[in-house]
Image (cartoon, rainbow, N blue to C red; front, side, top):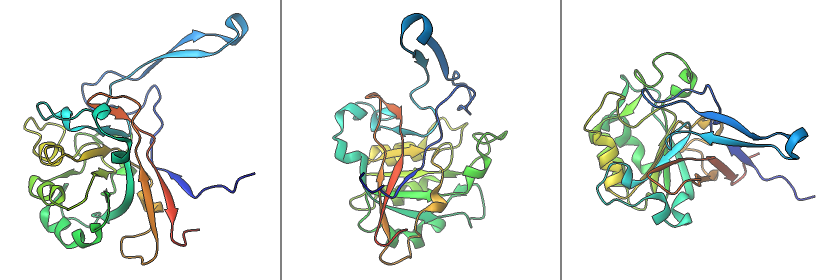
Length: 224
């Protein structure tokens, strides 16, 4: 038997009744086969591309931007770092919150923002009153050399009622991908812990403007 890898799941299960972005239709599972009658079990699944823990491609908001099928698999994995912004003073993650942490993102492919909103998953206002990234902070993240994407444990990088979507446009316009609705970032080594790190994976299922992902990390460097 192969030894188990130190993998951690950072995804919310995609299932009927799960929290959805305001206005999106719910996830539906409809049986297509029953074991007793058909000899197999299967389901027809209907869901928005941006359901649960999901990834945004540049084409989500950028005209002629790349779709997920246009990007190589290497864009969906790489060294990660957690930037802890739970101590911020307001809903928005500001440039003042992000600036002092950017040194930790040097050499990372994915910067994962721990906002603390995971604890609010499924509650009223998770999407409408949740954390988001201020435009100036998004611009700072978009300018980090070598970054493939950012992720966060909140519903969106922009407020739910935003029409201009400035954070999306800053990040996706720079060619990054965005992973929203992560969970479990508290399990990961802090950015300041020397000799410990992780590889982040967010492989999409769909090839369009967005897709649910099974986000996970492979721990390294002395993690138990």
